[in-house]
Image 1 (cartoon, one colour):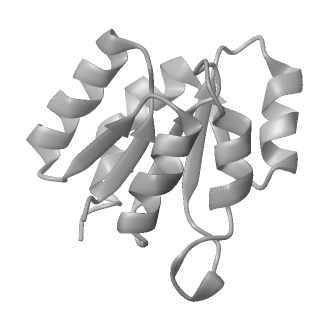
Image 2: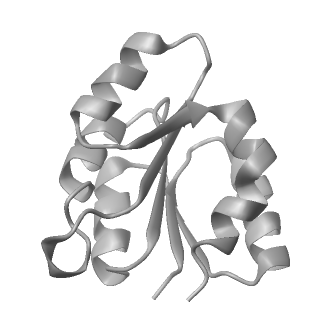
Amino acid sequence: MADVVALVDDLFFVAKLKETARQIGVSLETATTGAQLVAAAANSPGALVIVDLNARQGALDAVAQLANSGPGGNPRRVVAFLSHVQAELAERARAAGCAEVMPRSQLAKNLAAIFQGAKS
């Protein structure tokens, strides 16, 4: 079971996620499609979910499927990120059930704190 599951298809950002997870001491599983993310999250029901809304396959669908899939049917923490100029995509993510949507730069800046909150 992973502490964090992430949908990211940018190899450079995956490397940043992995290094930060290693430094904080959380386990991380990455996926490159929405379907892979949903499967990974099913195996880690309490995990924090991070979604790159610019991933090429299924990001918004995955958000919609995962937003209320936490333990006991409770909301799951889903943090989505995107380019700061994509206001419409941010609104679509919120409508799909994602409570935390932020620019990629903000996620990168606060990644250690976000991962710290996911420690089991």
